[in-house]
Amino acid sequence: MTPQLKNYIFGLAVLFTTSLLGCTSRSPASVKAGNAIFIHPDGTSVSHWGAARMLHYGPDGRLNWDKMSNLGVYLGHMKNQLTATSNAGAVTHATGVKVNANSFGLDETGKPVVAASGKSQTIMEEAVAVGKATAIINSGVIPEAGTGAFVAKATNRRKFNDITKQIIESGVDVILAGGEIFYLPKGTAGRHATAEQTQRTDGINLIELAESKGYTVVYTRDELLKLPPNTKKVLGIFAATNTYNDQSEENLKQKNLPFYVPNAPTVGEMLDTTLKILSQNPKGFFVVLEEEGSDNFCNYNNAAGCIEAVKRADDAVGVAMKFIEKSSNTLLLTTADSDAGGLEVVGDVNLPSPVPERSRNGSPWDGKEGTKTIPFLSAPDKQGKRFPFAVGWTSFGDNTGSVVAKAHGLNANQLPTTVDNTDIYRLMYATLFWEKLPPHDEKSSPGNP
Image (cartoon, rainbow, N blue to C red; front, side, top):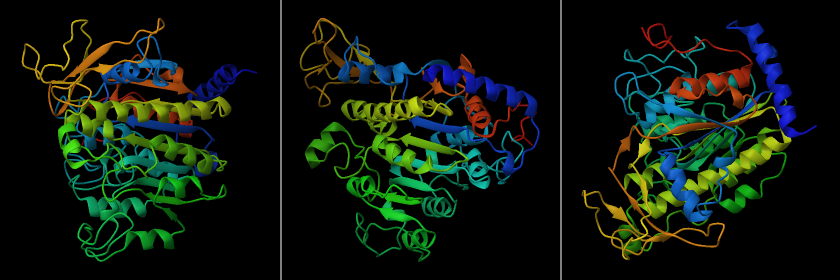
């Protein structure tokens, strides 16, 4: 039986079960072993993916992302504004409810957001509660909103110390990210952070707390990849802050800094190890992974760094797709919540070298090494021809742009062709818990008073 046929048969079973369950309550004993992997390449639009495709695979090549089976146009407005914030976008993905742009898991009254399931829990908190294996993975700092909002709540997204503590106490099995400065008391040096960098003012050493809870702590790519196969709980701390250096090309060159910390694992490597650990759980698993560099590099208008980050996200997509070939009861879902920097590829045949600093309408352009440098050169097409291109920017911020959601594996065919940001939660929920929730209605949403 082919993997595609297995997916189809399993999907029919899920749809039949969800139609019977409707919106009924369920006990932990009734939970089925559906798995979900949510990959959030922050800030990526169709143009970001296009730039990565051209540079790494050529105009006739295909990304792993291209090979995912289902696609829908993503609509990501917030409760009180059109453009999503990283924190509120993550809260909506984690709860299925639209929230105000400043939310980090709390509503306007300061209470925890009531999710579309009717519970004051995120989808990952529900997964932990019923015994599913869980993981959060981020190339940024551990309290980064795209993953942190799945297990933590705060009055302000910048309460990094408190958010980090909540994550360690969340019960999530695998926690992989940067941000050692938020684990250690001020004046305490770590593997990556100096004594001058560490931030905690409560005197708590969260690394020691994690070890007391049974976590194996690793600090480098090599240590992560050498974990024994029977490892159950892992805390990976791979940098003092982010695992990338999110600055302009010119600043990085001046400081002789690479895009990414050399001894830190990529998100693809993190996911590969995580799947080996979580797939041991017979109740299934839930992974939320964020490549944050694709947002942060673009917010600095660093085209080369941005494309590198998108490629890393695509590699993680490839890891998930390979896993699904052998595990047909797994959904892969991916989307961003906004368009970082408004990246566009400029592929004019008459593109000068070096590329001009700005286009005729005043938008800044980047070449291979930043402003006024030689163009990027695409990978060869089918005829072996390579093409020069530049990258143009519309802003430093996050925009409401051409974002799409894609799905692959179990229930992928249930992805709507027009995807509201609240639909992300609902598709993951049906896959993890075999419970179909009603469509989002802003007037009657549990998250609205």
